[in-house]
Length: 139
Image (cartoon, rainbow, N blue to C red; front, side):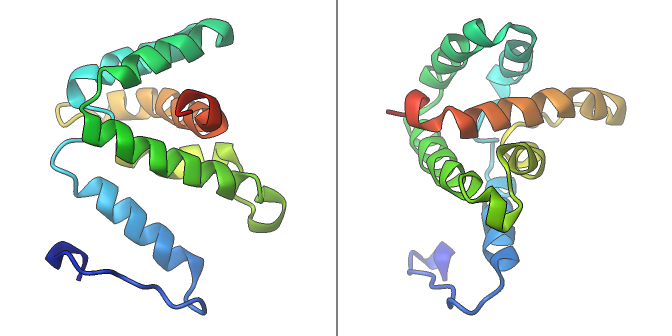
């Protein structure tokens, strides 16, 4: 239905994992990652900076994304920020969300398995920061 331009409604009694799976599938099936391929290394390297330098660098990189990617990223991260605020109930902290969402928004097709394993920590940290800082970054 979604791909036909029709509304998709998930019944309230449906498991939250279904909605999460749909979101991850949507992100995975994008022709290019939400955090664009050409900025991949810059986003990963941003995690080597200290926290005070990270936020402005991440904002700068987000500013280089296509408008549709930037707006989609903003909506998703603001939503995940709200999810993380209820971590006491749903057990999905910004850390946990970063781990499960990062491979779907930050990836490169030419990476070896070893590179993926090494860089996945930086991707999860970046996604965690995007979730935590969403109200500031996307204001």
